[in-house]
Image (cartoon, rainbow, N blue to C red; front, top):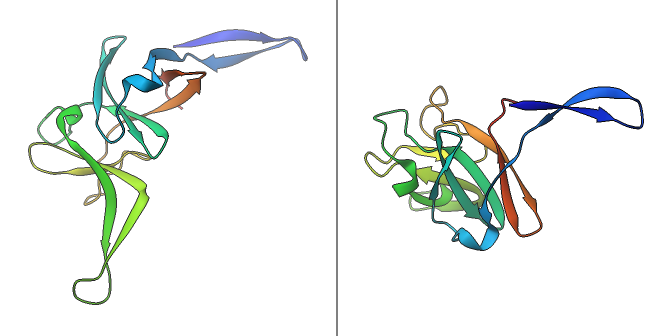
Length: 136
């Protein structure tokens, strides 16, 4: 839901995105998804490399709860047999049922770019984590 805000500098109205408090930064364990209920929606919150990500908590494949899944870096095969590179800046959330992996930054499936989960904008205010459910 968006709320009108009067911009004092110009006297015009702009629309701001509502940010809901989902907890203290210390409530979220690095690399472990947490389930929060936010205005009737299930949201998985993940802290990874100091960043906070928020995504829809259900896998589009068979509706498994993604907050029960595992988080890890993207692994890419190299040109040589046994060569693997680790992209720790690309966090992936794996579904606990069938291992479908989703990029927490974009929501896109690692294996099928047409399949994705909803991502939500996050912010920190002091030691608090905020999430916006607004479409962007």
